[in-house]
Image (cartoon, rainbow, N blue to C red; front, side):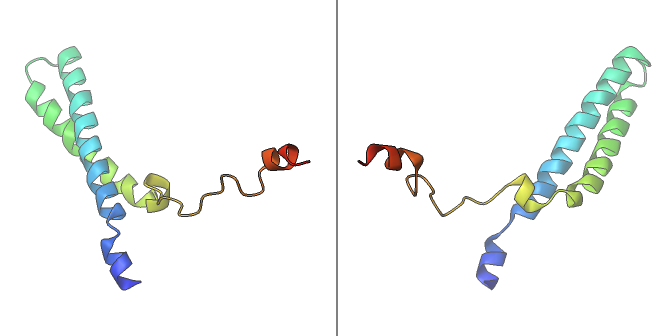
Length: 91
């Protein structure tokens, strides 16, 4: 069980993905704000947007469970077990 827990890196991948997404989304919003509001302070708004997005996504990431974000594959196949088609096909 301990080896399986060590191999489970879904939480770490979730955190990294949330941070990257927050940085990109914040940078994009900062770029949009810089283009529409203050053309001279563009780099500052992009940087501020990226930092705010990164902080916000870091705060949100722990609230997403690893199962919801990246569910494990179900080892059981339910295809064909007590299927209604089997009942109809048999006389």
